[in-house]
Image (cartoon, rainbow, N blue to C red; front, side, top):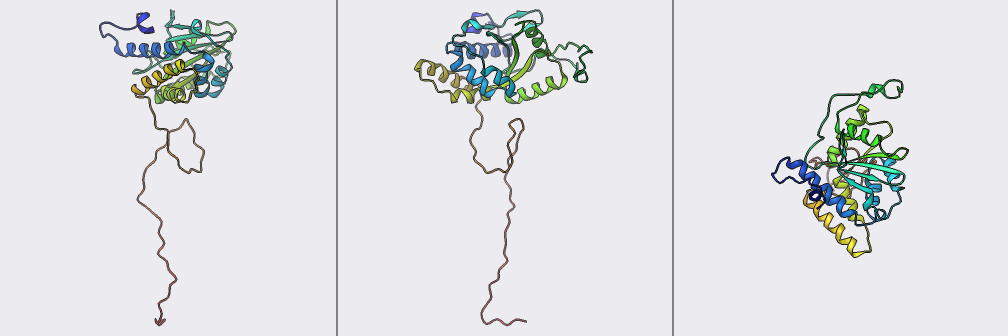
Length: 256
């Protein structure tokens, strides 16, 4: 509904991927804004956002009614974020991806300039880099966060690439949460209000239909710690350890 109100849905089928992302953005945040921030979105983000230092910052935001705190697709000369949250002490710019990658990128790499404050980093055309500069110009002394939402694998790859290249504004903290994680956290929410529960159930059904349901249950004994940022492969083996050694003696047999 929000995407259509804001004129983000194409009537001609032009740029279908962008329309799908805008519609998903509007459906997700447009539905959650009817539920107090403290009861739903804060819990989802504080539990699922990576890195944890950013999820901790979000967990400290105190807000109840927040429909007046969110702006969809705010225009800026450097680009257009999907959503912008403006709280008392924190601002959060949000970039959403569903069926496409970043809209722009380049080969700029400022990794060699880390800790060299006297050297001015080169501005990148990378979409997240541009959006970090937009956020940097807002909020004055507020905590500034740029949150990337996408498929799990895309989140990790894009985050690692952008951080390693050092192309995010220094006063902006980049973080991500995958749609798969959002779905898991939606399923964990315990809400007493039955009307709120209807909204959450609809969002769970939507993200499940979008294909974001992930494998959750496999109970195994494992001696090593599991790193949530790594991938693991499990496979069957045909080998087994067998011992046919016996100490039994046959009665009446002669020893040679």
